[in-house]
Amino acid sequence: MKKYVIVAFALSLLSLVGCVNVGKYVAYQDENIPSTVKVEAHKISDEIMESFENNNENVLESYFYKSDQSTEGVDGISEIYAIYNSALKDVEFRLLTEYYSPSKASMFMIPSLLDEYSMNIAIDNHEAYLLVYSGENIAKELTISTVMIKTDEGWKVLRCDFGMIRAAGSSANEWAKKANEFYEKGQIVSSVLHYQIASELSQLGPTIIHTDQKEIIDRFEKAREELNKTYSFPIVVELSNAKKVELVGVGIGFIAGEFSYTVNYETNYTITDENSTLIEEESSELHNKVLELFPGFENGIGYVVYKAYEELPVKTNEYQSYGTVIEIENTN
Image (cartoon, rainbow, N blue to C red; front, side, top):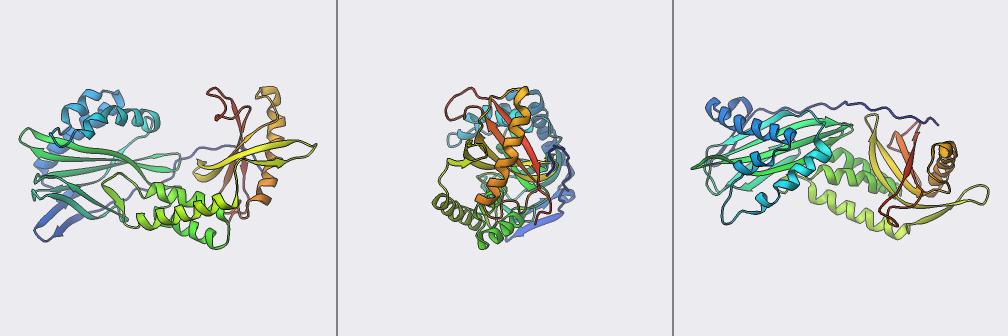
């Protein structure tokens, strides 16, 4: 059982070409988009992407489409920049794919976007443009999707959404398939955590929907209900020397380019450098108990992070924690 952390980036990008034809509705993709239109759209998109880096909310606000019927997006501009700064600031994004529709239809429709997704958004009989940027961050392939429409004032931003399309190199369907296998084996904790990833991957935004999103979320909810019936957190776990710890929950993470679990618990020790060895030994013993408690917990992952809290976050706003990373060998 090894204990270490390695951070790596290893995800492949997707590429698509062609056009969408649905009756009289047409959407051109990538190199098929007229160059003059592409130049206009890229100029605005480049300014917006740069504004994220510079935290300049005024840029997106100046381009945001404003109408009597649509103010929700404008109100959320500060939130968009806050999300970028907290989760995407250090990610290097590149253009993944783009679509342009000259149809001036009521809806902007892309039935097959990034293989597993579709987009359907009201555009009020305007020309429309979609740009999807992709970037990698600790084994997650993240996206920024911007939908623009052509108005009398030029191109305006209708929506800007953040999402995740691949995790540890796998898509939503691949995560859901693995989750279902665990569920059928009765390995409910592993099933729920894999379904959680699949559920997150199925949602790139309110208008970009995974083709199997409903099925994935329904199965996730079913598995989670069974988890709540089977286990009642917090769980008191007895260790050696008559010591006990309170296991308050499990979660997900990524380490060294691999999917990992996180186990949160309340330690017997004060979080100090002097106690680090004691906490690591405690976490290692707890790990053996967790494997007994949750059947199949070690399957499908490379690492488990045991996060020891001196005092749990639910009890105080100020807390300290110490993480012990345990490598899982011979995973299935």
